Length: 159
Image 1 (cartoon, rainbow, N blue to C red):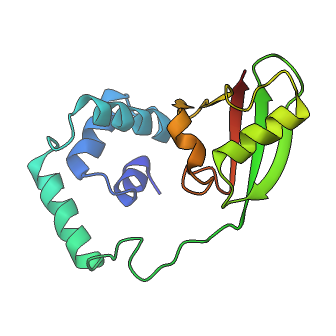
Image 2: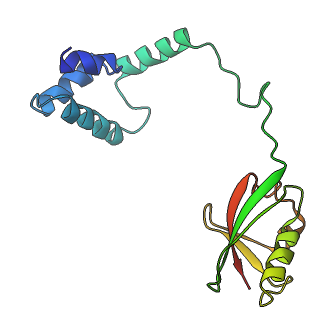
Image 3: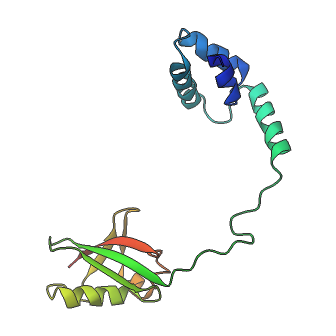
């Protein structure tokens, strides 16, 4: 199978395939694919060739009937427990604990204070690295499930 045929089998339009092969001097499949990828980045979305857009939209409509959303008819998995790794900003060893998902963030603060008396239950601040978020006092009464920590999360505790 030639490079041109392979690129066409990937769904690229003949015009784009020919342009990629010409631009890369016929050096093979990889350079042509790289060119097409770079070319996609240069063309703002929605501004490709109109023939290609029409071809893609018509084949998409023909192939796949309207798909149902994720939430339609599918129940999410409910995790009864939450596994937390709690890193301490003071440099002490991390804590790993598994708690019921119905526990609150306050119970996590109490657990940290039990393990490390330097941490005061009322002044501990929790932070998450990714997505970057700092949890306030109002979050302390929310459940671990409600905060999105289930099934597992990594928190940073600051005294």
